Structure formats: C-alpha cells, structure tokens
Length: 249
Image 1 (cartoon, one colour):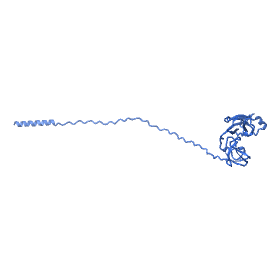
Image 2 (tube, rainbow, N blue to C red):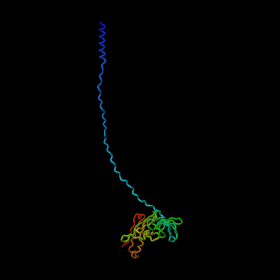
Image 3 (cartoon, one colour):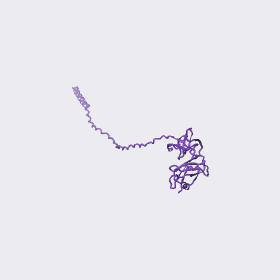
Image 4 (cartoon, rainbow, N blue to C red):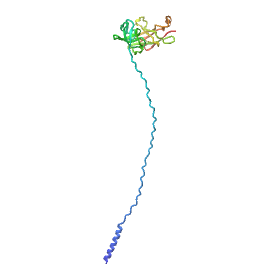
C-alpha cells in the first residue's frame, strides 16, 4: 500500500517538473524596419557656358601681282665712222674697239642719264657706247639699269633763273685748269634738269664742272651773260653730293 502511494507521488512530481522545464519561449517582438533615406547628393553649381559670338571671317584682299614684262634688247646702228666702244660709260674710260657707220649692235642696258648704253657688237664684244652715235627704234628707258662697277658718278641739276629745271643743257666735267678736250666728259641734262657723269675709279684731285650750252630759245649773247658759274669739286668725295647750278637772271 505504501509503495502505491509513493509511486503516485513520484508521478505527480515528474509531471510538474516537466511542466516547468518545457516552457514556451515568447516570440521576440517584431523589429521596426526603418526605410532607407536617400543619400544626399551634393549639387555643385556649374556655370553654363554662353555661346561665343562668332567673329566674321576676314577675307584676304587680293592684290594684283604685276606681271613681269620681258625685257627685249634693242637693235641699233652706228651712225659715225670710228665710233668707239669703251670699257665704261664715259669718254675717259679705255677704248675696247672702234666701229664704222652701219655697224650693227644690240643695246642691252643703260646707266643713269641719257648718254651711255651697254651694247654687244656683231663681233661679240661688249662695252659702252654714247647714245649720240646710235640710230635705233624704241626707248632706251625700257632697258634694265646697270651700276657701273669701278666708276665714280657725279650728278646734279641745272635750273633756270626762276628755279625751273632746264633740259638739253650740256655740262662739261674736266680736270681743273685743263684745256685738253680729250680729258673732258660732256653730258646732257634730262627732262627734270638732272645730269650724270661717270669717271674712271682712279680719278682724283680737283675737277671743274661747267655749263657749256644754253636753252635753244636763248640767244648766244644772253646765254653768255647768264651762264651759271663753274664749280670745282674734289674727287672722289664729290660723288656723295649733288652739284646744283642755276642760270643767272
């Protein structure tokens, strides 16, 4: 009987023990899920480029280029016997050869003034001839201008009493005090009254420059009374100045 009571007590104790050990774990309360906030984007203000005003395109100005004209030699005929071909553009330069009237030459160029031109002869000699002894067609001014190497150039003007240029006047250049015409260079003034005389490069000392003719409309007596006074220049320094002469009133 006692054993039965003890067994019942044990069963009751085990029942309560199991009831204490098997306890339902309460469910965790739901966690509130926060919505994701948008990430703040830093906005940097950027200047909006303004359209650049287009500059007008400059059109190049067309400049007409001069068309070079061919320079043609001018044929000429010697009009005097024993006409001299010289090494330089003046009577005081050495002689190359002499040519008779009717000889054919080709004029290639010129120097300043209207008196001397560079020619080539039919026998293939080259040198300078005075324009006074050449018959030709055409204008020597169209020919190229040459620099006379090794020559001394004198230049100047002849003026009237009212200061107008006088053309066609003969100017003589010679050693001061000399009366030898073989040592004298005669040149003629152009339309603007300018004259040019060329002397050999070894010319030195005092030289005289004189007007030795008058305008065609002036009578001889008046000419003698109004001729400009001669001037004395020293070579080679005088090549750097212009020699001016005027008729007297």
